[in-house]
Length: 177
Image (cartoon, rainbow, N blue to C red; front, side):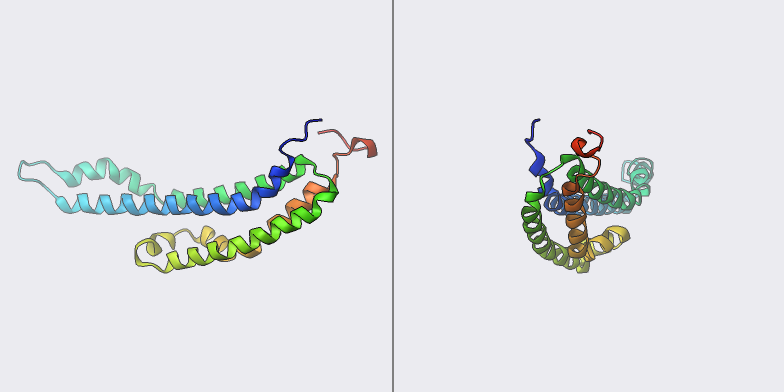
């Protein structure tokens, strides 16, 4: 059996932290940019040549701006999907129980790494520029405010699934996956 890549399930909590944070900042930046650009174009009004910039803006970027609240759902759905991926990847990898110490070590590193990310999120949330936009992401803010707790739970549930061997050990009667 090819066992390459089984230990990559160890890095899932760290990848979850990094990708979720960068994705959240990207979505908040996109929301901020579109809102700012739309507001500036609305302020132009009618130009000297008779071109109605406000009307053109409402027919183009205004449609995008009205769909921006969907980004709140997109961010929490992406985080929830990555949490499920982290747990299921460990389950299907089927690591040996001897790797439990390594799982605990990576879990501790992940929790330590999640504390400054959670603090950075709280600082950004308090800023004037991104804070107003980021406060709209209520579900994501809940996850990032309690990120060390979430990462601890995800890491240990993922480790239990990865090391359990339930339904994976065909010698003990389980089904081969």
